Length: 308
Image (cartoon, rainbow, N blue to C red; front, side, top):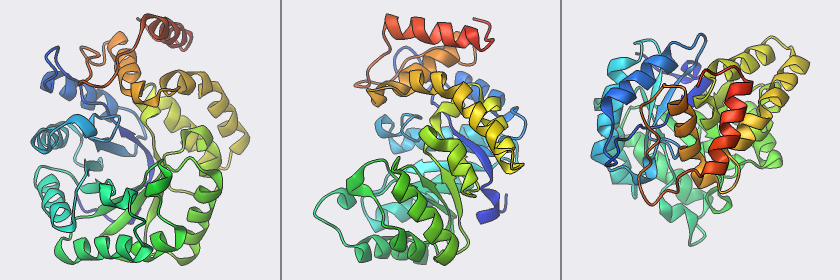
């Protein structure tokens, strides 16, 4: 499909990657999950191999296979974002091109580890994307990681957003001031770029600021309800959107309470309990959900009408 900044509108789900008991990709279950999510009315799109999608523990070859399966199962008109974690400019180009060849319509780039230490300058961050932009025409999604040492300053993001290949950003700093500054700066000084909020703690408020959508792991579970919140905000029914956010708060807090690294296990358990995927296995060393948490999740899923 043809992709530009207007493509990134609505709720995007960074889906989990189902695994077999021996921690290999469960392709049948993945296909089932993608078909289930794709059937959600009004869903904006899908993102593969994010942190929730086991991106940090999957090999690049495994990620390419996930991208292929998602491209085969998702509708042709549903945007599919592949996620890569490059180490250098050349590595980024290679991985971005590979993801696109495997079926990704756009590629979200996790900032290189080099960006997190050594006090890299804003110029270095910009040059990285300038170099990538010069060597590929694949649409790129930026990622404002919820780790302060990785953060892009608003002015730097505005500058990067004018590059031809940069079409969207997932802003997931979880910092209200930085998020607001980024949104304002991009709206006033940025190029043609869509903003997807990753801040599930204040998602309805994000929509009220005029961002184009969301990319949040909590939307793996009851995605139709997160789409409903987005639709209410887009219709300027903000009080109702805030009420919907409050209604979803318990579910969000259970899935993403600390330690957040366990969120993938919790989400998989919730999906497996509803027979959306076949099992809740996560790849080690990720922690697995305990009995107390499964009991809490079961209660909440049943309260929301799930048949377990």
